[in-house]
Length: 320
Image (cartoon, rainbow, N blue to C red; front, side, top):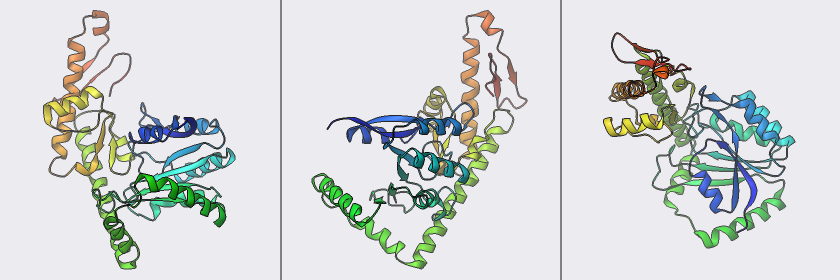
């Protein structure tokens, strides 16, 4: 299949987005999304990049609980994104994998998609029910496309069937029937929404606990843990720190520092925080003590806290 530039995604995004789109024959481009230095949304640069994307390009947007950063646009920012994409004649492609895990309210978590439709966009949305329905092994999902009229919708559906038939023909039915049964019943739907809220509340409580434990006795800023939402914490840990957590403490997260907050519990949060602080000290002590350049060594400032739980090391910038 001929490769062409027709797809643009946030930087960073879920790692599998890239090979999926490349294997579909698309040339993958990126727009700025996350400011790693300040652990925040890089909104102005994001808007600037969107304004420079060629007309007719498909643009991936995370509907809620952005993976991996957990940093979502505000309602006002979503409105500006919608306007810029409408003015630029860009095609929104929403990935909605964590509905119910962002705000704790599943219907509310779809507000960005509804906003874009109300603004007159023709778009596509992919939904996953793996996490919010506990059906990870079933791989239940849906592809929804909003077309301009019934005629266009019929043509799109015809093309989709032609693509699906030689790929997998018919999807497994069991998991899809479970989701359909629940969402077709008002009482069961209410139970689903309430249980998503319970999960989101627990995760948010763990965010508060992890941040509190990390900040105790030190002055490294962990505010981003509670600013982020959803299943993941984009911790800001370096590859070296992630490797040390794995090798020294049997604590596992992805190499970009993404922590699954669903795996943080009241029983292990203090252990996780203690390991992170211990490895922070060890790594930067090694950095200082192994320096062979005295002029560089002299620019470091090592400050030990009374409980020896944290140090910060400064060389031209504050690592705290």
